Image 1: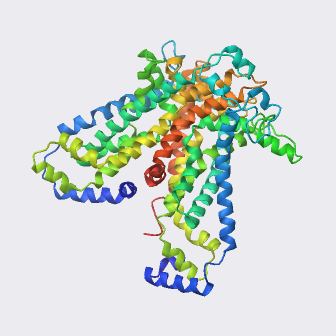
Image 2: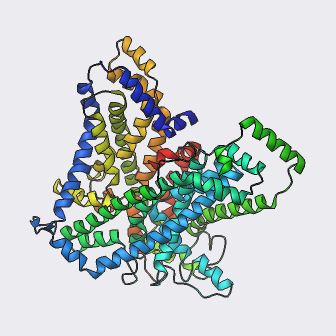
Image 3: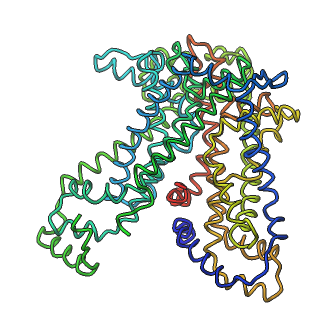
Length: 315
Length: 317
C-alpha cells in the first residue's frame, strides 16, 4: 500500500516514463473507439456539470434573471451596478480580512507542526491525531466552537472569567467575528496543511541536516537556511490550494453568524447566495461569482509566479 | 546553503554523526527537544479537547448546563439528548430537558447522508477510473488536449457552477431528490481523474502486453488486471472522496431541501436555527453533531494509516 501511494506521489516520473514508452511504439493504431467508451460517462458529467454551467454562468451574469422568469440580456449592467454597490465592496473587504488572517496563521502553524513532526517523530498515530479536525465538516467545527466560545456557557469564556478577565462576544462582536471564524477554520485545516508540509519535507534528504549539524549549524539555523528554502515550491502549491479554498468561505458563516452582526461577516460567497436565493437576483449573483472566479484565477497565476513553483533547489 | 551544494556522501555523514553522538555521550536530554515535544503535545491537546467537549456536552442536560458551564464532566448525565435528536423522546420529555420540542429525526438524515455520500463516491470513483484509463493507457487523437481541458475545471470555484447547475436541476424537476443531489458528483471530478491517471501511468506495460498476447481486449484488461492491481490507490481515493462528500454543505443546502433528501450537515444548520437563542439546546446540538461525525471517525479509525499517508503531493495537485 505504501508503495502505491509512493507511486502516486512520484507521478511526474511515471508520466515521463509513460511518454517515452509510448513514443517508441508510434506505429500502433489508435484506440479511439474503445477510448470513447471508457471516457463517455466522465465526458457526459464534465460537459453537463462543468463546461455547460461555466458558459451558462457567464451568460447569466449578463442578464437580469429572477429564477422564475426568463433571463433578460442586459449587457454589462450587473457589473456596473456591482462596482457601485457598497455591500459588494464590504463583502470583498470582509473576505480579504478573513483570508489574510486565516492563511497567515494556518500556514505558520502548519509549517511549525510539519517541522516539529519531521524532526521529532514519524509516528502515524501523531499524524492521525493532528488530522482529526479535518475529518469533521466545516459545519460541525463551526457548531462545536460556537458552543465553546459562547458568551455564557462557553468553556473559553469560563476560563477567561476564571482568570479574572472580561468575557468576549466572539461570534457576536463587530471586531471579533471575522477573527473568530478565521480561528475556527485554522483549527480545522491546520492539521491537513501540516501533513501536506510534512510530505513536502520528506523530499529533503536526512543527510542534508546531518551535514549541517556536523558543520555546527543549530536546529534553528537549519530551519531558516535549509528547510524553508527547500520547502518553497511545496509551499507555493499548498498556498494556491489553501488561499483558493479560503476565499470560498461559506459554511462556517452560514451556520453561525449568518453574515452578522450587521454586515461584519457577510463574506463574498454568503453575499452571492443571499442575492441569488433570498433576493431572487440570480443574474447579479452570477456577476459577483464571476468576479470571485476571476480573482481566484489571478491569485493562482500570481502565486505560482511569485513563489517560482516547480523549481526545487534540490534538483 | 554551502552544505547543500556539497552534501557529504551518506556513509561519511553517518560516520560523522556517530562520532558527534559519541563525544556527546549517551543521548543527553536536549532541552530544545523537550520544548519541541511540549509544543507538539499542546497542539495535540488543542486538537483533541473539542472532541471531548462534544461528547461531554452531548451527555449533559441542557437546562443544567447553564448552571455549571465550567464542569469538566457531563452535567446531570443523561442520554436524553440522543433520544431527542433521534426522535425517540416525547415532546414533553424533550422540552423538560431543554429541547425545542420540534420534531427532528437525525436517523433519517443519517440515512440520507449515507445514500448521498456512498452513491456519489461509488459513481465518481468508478467513472473517473474508466476515464483515467483512457487518458493513461489508450492512444487517441486529442487525448492530451481533452485531459488539459478537464484539468482546467479545477480552477472554477464551486459556487460559479453551482448557480447554473441549480437552475438545471430545478428545470429537470429534481430539487429535493437524490438524483438531483448526486448527479453533479456522480460522473467525474477532475481531481479523481488526475489522481488515478497518475497511478495508471505507473503500471508496467509488460503485464498489459502479455495479457494482449493472450487475446484480452481493453475491457478485460481494465477489469481483470488494471482495476485489481490498483485496489490500493482506488481505496485511498474512495476514502478521500467519501470524506469530502460526507462534509459537503453548499450544494445539499441548495438542492436537498426536504426531509427526505436533507443530509446531516444541512440538518445541523437547520437544527441550530430552530433552537431558541435564549437557552439553546446545547446537549441536543452536540448529540446531533456527534451522530454526524461518528461514521466518518469510524471509517478513519479503520483506514487511518492509509488516509494519513495518502495526504501528500497527490493531495496538492
